[in-house]
Amino acid sequence: MLTKEGLLRYEANRGVFVSTPGMSTIIDIYRVRRFIECPALAQAHPRHPAVQRMRVAVEDARRCREVKDWLGVGSADIAFHAAIVELADSPRLSNFYAHISLELRLVFGLLQDPEFLHGPFIDQNGDILIELEQGRSAAAAEKLEAYLQRAERFILGAYARVAPST
Image (cartoon, rainbow, N blue to C red; front, side, top):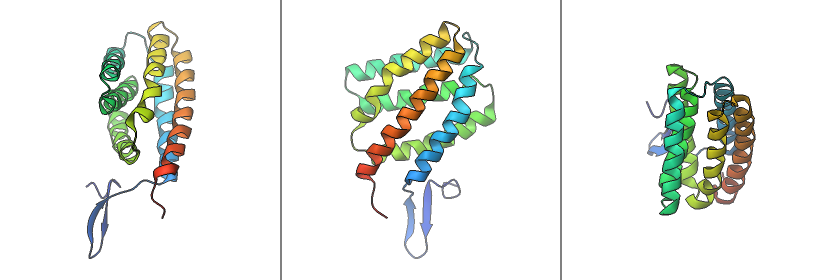
């Protein structure tokens, strides 16, 4: 099943290996994220139950930052974005996004500095949440669009420095 989903690859007479995502995969992941997350946020109601999960994720990320638990910050970031997808009230989108998150974690795992990777986005998540909680879902979606574009460029740059040559 993991091979079918692209997370593992089978090589005849060699075995099974964790897939190494390429630059085109990262670009596609962020394209999909913008297609899913931005409209879900733009159409969200500020009192949707997923907003509380977004709040918990932001608070968890801040607590993890205080103790320099950067992998915890990364997990909180993934939870924040999963909660954004939950705003769409679509179990299919949430399941699909869970797969995208797994691929994204593969990319994150290749990057060697989780503080560098996750640190800049903690407060940006908080800013997006504030916009939504104050009833400005369109403004929150605009911030998220810009955030995802910055994150994509940031990750592509970091990935280019550490990715194995093929």
